[in-house]
Image 1 (cartoon, rainbow, N blue to C red):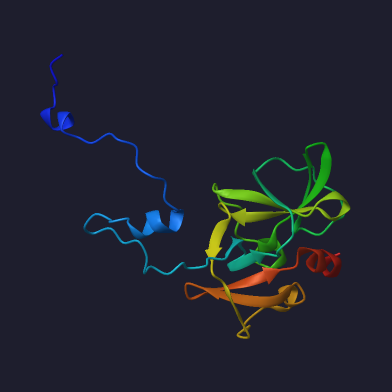
Image 2 (cartoon, rainbow, N blue to C red):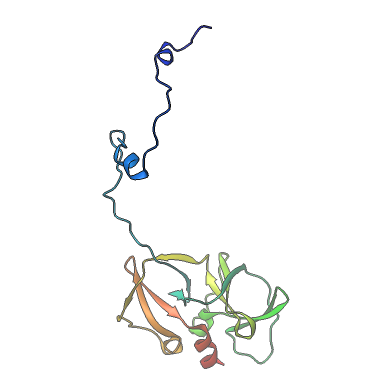
Length: 181
């Protein structure tokens, strides 16, 4: 038999005694440039937010949410102009609200990138027209700097957060609907 790799001929293949995990790790010799430690583990908190009516909103923790593309709504007669109508989602009727209409800026219509964010479940479900997809808000920090919130929105904002120098208002959609209704 001819050996293709001559260094294997001289290799020692005799069994070695077992060592403990700690001892094995102490014998580990990492390659040059390998960083075994020293880097801190950075905790990240991610919340989800959306933009509507010129504001950046955070979805409250624990609130179910689903994003659906714009779809036709059945108009409900004798309702405020901000109630776009009712849509059928998974066999459930969901009211759809347009915060832009509530804000009084009725000149602006939903853009081509608008979507419907459905918040809650069961009898407490409602859809809101939002500007594009929801966004991941990383490491939001609570702030007391809540200024410039219009009266139509103030009751639906319990707290505010800052992330990447942007203020995010925590949106209490249930309070909004109770006051608006």
